[in-house]
Every structure is written in structure tokens, then in C-alpha cells.
Image 1: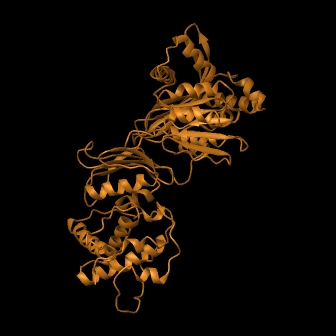
Image 2: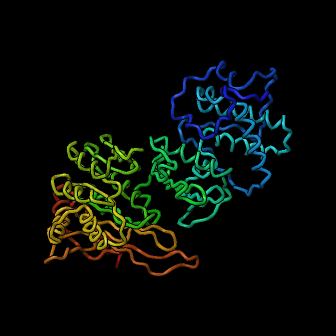
Image 3: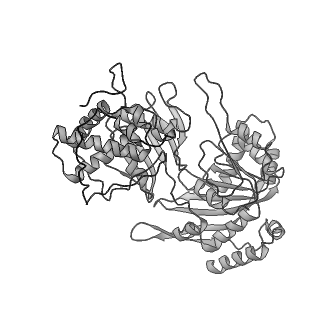
Amino acid sequence: MFGRRGNDDGNRPTPGFRPLATTPPPAASPQAADTLVAPRPAAPAPAAPAAAPRRNFEPTPSFAPEPRKAQRERSESYYDTKSQVFSALIDTIDLSQLAKLDPESAREEIRDIVNDIIAIKNFAMSISEQEELLEDICNDVLGYGPLEPLLARDEIADIMVNGAKNVYIEVNGKVEQTSIRFRDNQQLLNICQRIVSQVGRRVDESSPICDARLPDGSRVNVIAPPLSIDGAALTIRKFKKDKLTLDQLVKFGAISPHGAEVLKIIGRVRCNIIISGGTGSGKTTLLNCLTNYIDRDERVITCEDSAELQLQQPHVVRLETRPPNLEGEGEVTMRDLVKNCLRMRPERIIVGEVRGPEVFDLLQAMNTGHDGSMGTIHSNSPRECLNRIEAMIAMGGYSLPQKTVREIVVGSVDIIIQAARLRDGSRRITHITEVIGMEGDVIITQDLVLYNIKGEDQNGRLIGSHVSTGIGRPHFWDRARYYGEEARLATALEAMEKASD
């Protein structure tokens, strides 16, 4: 009954095939479904158990099942049973015919075949265990395998896979180990290949490092053997399904209500903004929030290594870098993108992350009529951010005098917003700082808003507040007046100063 189908040479198909959802399948037909397995005697359809209704899944490459309420520890016998059922399924199913079905029909067909395999092999399993096994195997064949329940949980910020047996997640700023595991390192590598192939990239021994993204914009990094000794290392920086706004950041305590009002005005009046912060501090999230206040009639061009930004404006052009091919040719760098987008008549240029010589091209764009441009930089304070900009310009091979470089920076950057991830796992905007000019060879900045830590509560959570530095008329006041926002800005700064007192 379970003869191999679709493989004339008798070799077993591997589970690491290209994801089915990436190729638009034709409409499912009864004839196509009937050819997935060898003909079976007709039998009346069993009644579906009332306690376990089948779920509907969206036809996207990253459809995610509902998260289980409790991820219990699974025994070795469970994984052994799953391996046997999976092997029998691969021997039975015709992958070429499965590819012609839509995701829901393919999932239903797989469930029917797995139920038959469990019955024939007489595995002793409870209804709940059988449902878990069905879900896991469907995820292995059609989705991202054991990662699916983690991808479905919106409260998870990061997923870190260190080989097949160790999977960690970050929840509420804290890292914890899960009971999730892969069948073996080959299954993990197959899942990695499935993810990166969706954006036209590859990961193998010849190209063991790869950056990619999921369809929802979540950032993916893979480093495979031989560079990763204990199996492939997969890191996913997840983005929430519901995009955060500044108002939501206020509820989380990342910024005060009046500070958020100042940020809205800064975004509205086309200040050139650099968002500074360490790894995991929320720079990209904050950048997404600020782009909500760009006028909808502006032409915005984004440049990123992996396209993560999801702007809501109608006139957005998204550009993404490209790694070199096997011959080492065809690479398109961030600097190439920034240079090219200057010829695309942008009104604002947004660089997802500035990490090299492209910072000079971004500064030139900010200083030549593309007001309101934005970017993010890894640094731990506004002053360090300015130093890193100078260092990255030097990396580009420019032999400019230090004073000239600093004059370019002062003429280009208006605001530095510092984000930080504190030791209790919370994320806060710690500085809103203006770049106002130079005295001699020194860049002069002034802080508008600071975050003061006052202590911690009995649960170890830090207690603090955002305070005004007392600046009543910031350096960008004339720009705010030009856009008719000076009264709103004055009100926000005054209210913040009163709250600080």
C-alpha cells in the first residue's frame, strides 16, 4: 500500500524540498488528490472528533498554527514514533502531486495518510498525542517544522536555535530554553534552506552565512556547518503581527506621552533623524513608528540588507542588498543602493541600518535636499553615535580632515534618538538629543528629553521616568514654525517640564 510514488529510481525523496507555498498552485481537484497515494479501498469517512476541530490556515508561505497553551516535554518514544510515521509518509506520498494542491487541501491529505499509517502500524497514542503528531508532521512537510508554534506566539521577540537539540526564545526581555527540538541536524538545515530560498538566497557549505527574512518581515540569520560546529545556528528576530505605534510605546513605558508628542512633531517637520541603540534595543521598531508620521503624498525609498521596514504610506519603494553569487560576482552593497536611490527622485531616504561607508552617502543625501531622511546605527549613546559616524566615514577610505567630517555631520543630522535595552529586559528611549553646531573642532549637542532611573521594585523591574531638560525653544524651532507645529511643540515641551517638576 505504501509504495514509493514519483521516484522511478527508487530513491527516497528528502523532506528538504522547496516550500510548496512559494509556487502558486492550481485549484485542487479530486483527481489530483486521488493520485497522491496508491489507490485505497473506499471506506466511509469517519466522524470528526468533537474535541479537536480542524483549523483553517492562511495560504501563505509562513502560515502558523495556533500556539499550544502548554508545550510539554516530549519523550524519546514520541520522537521515535514521529520518525517512523514521517518515513512511511515520505515513502507513500507523491510530492509532485502534493505540490499541485493548495495548502489546505495538502494539509488535509497529509492528515488522512498519517491517520492511516498510525492505524496500520498500530501505534498506541491518545487523541491529543495523535493531534500533536499530525500537526508536527504537517508543519515538517509544509511549513517550518518545530518552529511553527514559536512563530505563532506573538509575545516571543527572538528565536535562537543552537543545533537540533537546543532552542531558546526571548520573552519579555528574558531568554529561556524551550522543549522544542529537531529530529536531527539535517532537518534543521533543511528548514534553514527552506526559509532562505524564499528570498532567493542559499545556505550550504560553499555559502555558510546567510541573512534572510520571513514573509512578515522578521529578520533571519543562518550560519551553517562547517562554520557552526554543533549543527546549523538559526536566529530569528520576530516582528509583532500588529505593528507598534508611538501610542503603544507610551503604554509600555518606552516614552512618556509628552515625549511621544515631541517625536511625532520631529517626524512631521522633516528633521533628519539617526536612531542609535545597542542590539535588541528596538531601533527598527522605533523607526517603523516614526515613519507613521510621514505625509502620505511623499515619495519614500528604503534601503535595507533584509527588507524589514513596513511603511504604511502608498508611495514607497523598497530596495534590498544582494550577496555575491558562487563566483563572487553580482553583489549589490548598501552603498550601491543609497547612491542609486539618489537618482530615483526620493523625498525621504530611509536606511534600515547604517554599518559602513554608506553613511557618507546618507549624510550627503540629508544635506542636499532630502530632508526627513532616517537611519539606525549601533551605538550606546548620542555622543558615541557621532564618533561611530566619523569612524564609518574613515572606513570608506575618505581622507578628509576631521573638522570637515564633523561639519558634514552637523550640517546633516538634526536629531539623535537613543534607544536602550535595560538590565531588566525593558526597552526605553533614553535620549532625544539635538545636534546644534560646532565650537572649534567639537560637535555641540543638547538633550531635550532624558530617562532617569530611580531604582527598582521588589520584582527587580527598574523604576524611572522621562524628564525634560528645560529647553523651551529647541534648535529645530524654526523648522517646526515653517510646518505650523510650533504651538504644538511649545505645549508638549511645557507639559513635560511641568511633569518633571
